[in-house]
Image (cartoon, one colour):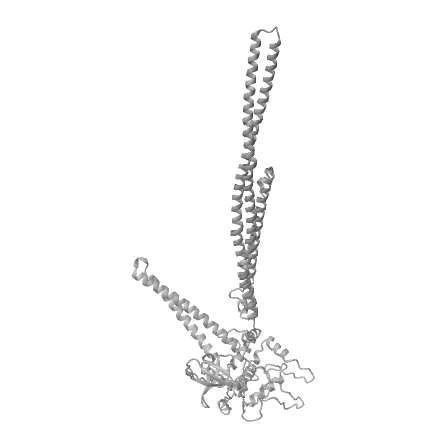
Length: 621
């Protein structure tokens, strides 16, 4: 159906309808524009949200993101940034593909509509002019006919009157003829104008108006098609980002599935492991014998009767007394739990007069534990345990981190070494840059004075030397902790022997002083005499009788290792050896080549194949 034939007389209504269509299009443009603003605002809010929960640099939060759950959360935050980016893409595509295009199309549509309706009004004006001309000629023809009729009647009247002269009659006749001629001329003119008007009217209603209305109809249909295409584009813009948004969501799911609770638990162990051994059982103290007390072989008193003290490290160790707990003197009073006593020890104020007993007790307890497990080539941590306890009491923070447990100390030292190496590299880069600039000045003196850089170059070199010395110092401490320096273990054994191998008189004196003291401690003055009677005992003979450990698997050397330190063993790349002790978390694995050759190699240098069914296999955590 065509508007030109069906709506030939609805020019004004079509004008209103087409204007309404343009208003609808502009309304849709406004809707899409507001949608793009919402998308931008949503993307901005998502980015701000992700930024708000990002870990701050150089803060404690950054360390927490070692755990898999925190890594998954960080991955979620990163994916949310990508997710927000897709909403920005939606906004950009809708703006460029819909808003801008439709806005330009609306302007073109308005111009086209204006042109069509201008032609329609022009045709209307032309037909109205033709109608006015027809009406004018018709009125003139009517007037001339009336005038001719009156003139004819006047002539006939004059001709019938006998009293009128012949000249007057002739004059009346001539006047009637003139009027009659004018009427004929008006009739001919009216007929011509009428035919012309009919032709113009036919052209107007059957040619001009249908053509104009047809163009307006096509324009309106294009507008409808265009708004439909824009709606499809609106949906396609959303559909295009769905795969990427789906990938973002898949990555979030993948990050969630990568959470490993066992790994996080292991990280907690690595973060807070002290390296100390838990205390042994507390021996029963018999108060029914008032003059003689029976204590365990490994208690603080370590009383074995008269004579030279004998220290043994057998395979079956008796329960050890926790050296930091104050003994209860009243047999009727109920003993507090061990955890309450340890908390009381940690939180109580330091008592300077009992540091010697703490040192001896801590050294004996930790050294016995470590020495039973490790060979001479492995580092012992008895002094670290003692320093850790004393640091808890005194709140000291030494430069070598000796106040920390062994594992934590190793990590801190490694971190410090890495930081110093980065500083050294930074200074070396600066030195190289200054050297290159100096060479440029030497080749092109007009660019600058080479001597002006000597002071800066000397200062940088001095900084490098200071940093290297500092790094060597921390590397030495790190090597000491990791067991690469045998002097540390030898010194530890000698000092541990001096602390543990005490004569009975000194030990008994300490015990008696503790009983006489109200809080179970003894004063510095009371123990001065026993302090000078410490005996040095060599423990090396105790390890000669130790039975060899059974093999728990095999290993293949990935690299050549020159075992130059005591307790280590040299291996050649590709060599196969037996594993007798796994890595305990310090980076060393104990291996055996034959019955006479065994020692430690770095765990990263070998590939271990454990035999889970091997007799005597042990797994250390």
